[in-house]
Image 1 (cartoon, rainbow, N blue to C red):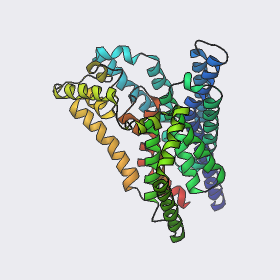
Image 2: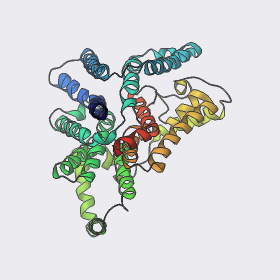
Image 3: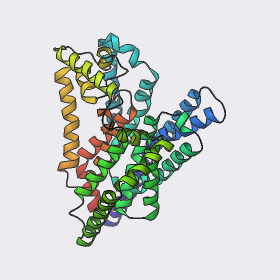
Image 4: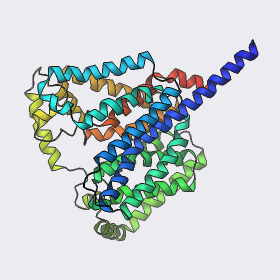
Length: 408
């Protein structure tokens, strides 16, 4: 009986391991899809003169979704409880459609169809069922190589600068640059260091300001958190390198400035251009939107406008700030509750968790997927927000299972 029991346990561990790897690969493909679609669609438009690639984009979404569903079915992920959760989430949007007439046109748009039938199902049936993130670094590392290669070819050969939105590109590739840095710091390899530099250069040349600042923030957070865990020799090396960089910048300040100005002009780098114009953190367009949002909040009272409520109160596509968006959509009470739940997930996983893999994954995905909503984007229409919430809920409430797996 003991031999049979041990054999059953071994079989279950192998099954769980294969399931986790399959689900992590599925998550990687989901995040890579925007990078891949940018590459394919730009080639079709620039090189083949296609005016619309909507059908091809939709076909790729469907193929990937079916491939992921096959994995979920294989590993018995379609449970009654999870189907019930999925229906409850859809009920939330249906109630918004019934109760808030002004939101109806937004709730039936194409991007919301992707949220209902692509991102939310993947969040519930795939992401939420990952119970061992120790494979994430190795898996995402390979996808990071592909992402950075596609981005580099797109910038140098496919003419991204005249065909693609720089903000979409930089936010799409950001998760993979963050992950490649994380992989390099865990296991220093020359190829990872080179990949990181190339990815960073891609965003520097053709990217928005915020993703670069978010990447720098992650590096600082990661190094501070792991500083005490290093040996004295490593700390000394870091201090020497840091001092060397600071001294070099101080001594060759004018030469470096001129060199960077020339590079900014030749590459049309938005990030460097904003630095030299003293506009790194300035945005006149957002300032106007935030003024309107503040006025709306001051005069809102107990009114609730439902999802997309911010569109009705500011003269912009969306309010460009997740705090304003929650409050203007759900009112002071519900909006504050939703924001506090997200804050709780972040604090519990990054600041309070004692499990290194949880802390690292939470930092990576918070920087790569979430911080952008404080200055750009709209959480309700972008699928990565739902992926992020599923990841954080997973990391927050599967702590016991992760500990159990690590011990076994």
